[in-house]
Amino acid sequence: MKAASATLHHGVCEMRIKYEVSAGGLALRRRVDSGFDMLLIGRGEPRVWSLPKGHVEPNESNEDAAIREVREETGCNAVIIEKLSEIAYWFYINQRKHKKSVHFYLMRYTDGDTADHDHEADEAAWFEIGAAKKALKYVNEKRLVDLALEMLSKMSPDIVGPAPLPEAEPEREVRSS
Image (cartoon, rainbow, N blue to C red; front, side, top):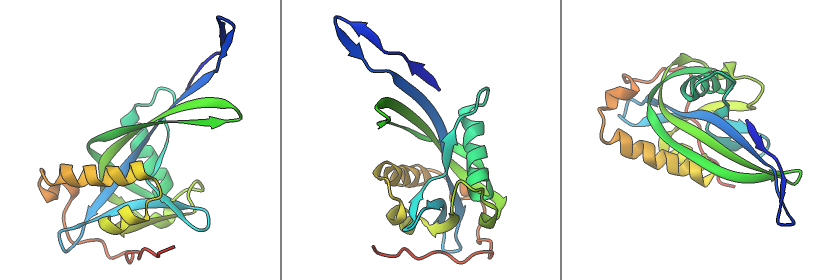
């Protein structure tokens, strides 16, 4: 993370900006019906569902951070298929402006159990991809689902791995709020 300091320029104080870089993944697994399930993390009550993501550590690549964050926050391992997109946004904390860039990767589930997620998420769960898009809180993450589906339409479904699904967990239903 870098911080730009405030300076006085022609009598106007320019605000300090903190730059943050994170990485995360849109992890998928194949379904028996040839569709896909997507891995989400949930926080709070009522649940706010989002994609797993977190800060890139010093000397860590964006790709390695995405793999690590998916593993830590969901309990599941995944490998990168392809870079999906970068989302950049601004926000304020204590009157300090932040610019955050999040590098997202399309990923394929390899193994693991959502029960093994870390303390940063209250829950990790598999959703059918359409239900996952509905459950996601943030519009930019919903757009990533559309982008992933567009990318997948140009690839072999086997890129996401073989069907059928592991029988470990039932899929979640999206509840209307």
